Structures are given as C-alpha cells and as structure tokens.
Length: 173
Length: 102
Image (cartoon, one colour):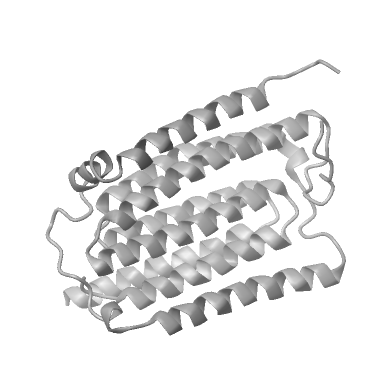
C-alpha cells in the first residue's frame, strides 16, 4: 500500500513539474510564467523529498519559491507593459532550428544515459535516516567541501554588489 | 528507496532540461529566457540529487546546493541587467539587444 502511495505522489509531482515547465515556456505573459515556475519549483521539492533530500527540499522552497521568485515578480510588476516581447521572433527557419536543437539535446541526453546504464544503477544504495539531513550536509560543507562553501559566499557577495551597481541610476554621458 | 527507480527521475530531469532549452532558444523576452534557464538548472539539480541517493553519496546534494546559490546570483545579475535595459528605453527583446555598450 505504501508503495502505491509513493508512486501516486511521484506521478503527481512529476506531472505537475513537466506541465508547469511547459507553461513557463509557452505562456505569453511573464507574470503568469513566473507563477508557473513557482509551481514547478514546488513539485520539484516534492520529488527531492522522495529521494531523501529533505534539507534541499526545504532550501528549494525557501530560497527559490520564496526569495528568488518574489524578486522576479517584483521586477515583472515594476516593468509593467514594457515586459511584453513578441512570443518568438526571427525568421521561421530560426524558430524551427531552435525546436530541432532542443529536441537534439534531449535525444543526446537519453542516448548518453542509455549507453552509461549499468548494474550499479539498478538498485539504490542503503542509507540511514540522517541521509540528506541539515546536519549531514552541513558537516560535509565544513569538512570536505570547505573551499566550495567559501567560494559560494564570494559568488553571492559579488552578485549582490553587481546587482547594486547595475541598479544604481547613472547620469554621466 | 521505495517507489520509482533512478531511471524515472532521470527521464523527468532530461525532459525538463529539454523544455528549458527550448524556452531559452525560442522565446524573445529576456525575462522568460531567465525563467527557462532556471528550469534547466533545476533539471541538473534533480539529476544530481537522484544520483546522490542512488549511490548513497551526499556530495551530489552539496553540489545541488551550490547550483542553487549560483542560480540565485544569476537571477540577481540578470534582473539587474533587465531593469537597466528598461531604464535606458531599450526594447526588452533579446533579438534587439545587439550592442554591448550602453
């Protein structure tokens, strides 16, 4: 019974994920696209929970669906009517080429995965309950991945400074 | 891990990546291009986390957290650029933005 529930939740989350992804790409109004992306991020968080990434699921909802998307919606509202660009521009040949290129990427990924498929991908490893908990991830960040942790903080600092520089009005011409 | 195996997760991740790539290449509004980029980054994160669970190694989840930080930085800079473009009365259309200098 538990197995059936897991599969049902998985299909609901995966279906919601793909449907809202299509909605983000196809909707004309950027505001609705951003709202669809929030749905996409929420269903991804459910998928994360199913692969025992509890901390990442929480961070996904807090950082993405919370902070990033609020900023995004704020900018869309600030721009107002200016944000409306044509749905897709350029000659029809370019549009067809874009669809073909995206389909080719997808085929490449599937082919590479199929070639790499082996016995080690059949049965998942045994993990204990602390797998994916904040404590386990925090310990890794402060031991094995300390350099990555520090570089991430510098990246965020540079991005914050860059955002301020870009956002400051300059009137020197 | 009861329920779906890693293959199911990888199928969703690959499809999501394809959807995002199509959005980046097809759409003309820089806002939608940014949103599609987010979808592509998240597809990569999903694959990382699925492999992390499959192999019982937490490094993949740490990498996914770093991806999340990079995505936040990218959105901050990208939105700043878009607001700067709008302020200079440039059209918000990636086909029209052909000059790098202000």
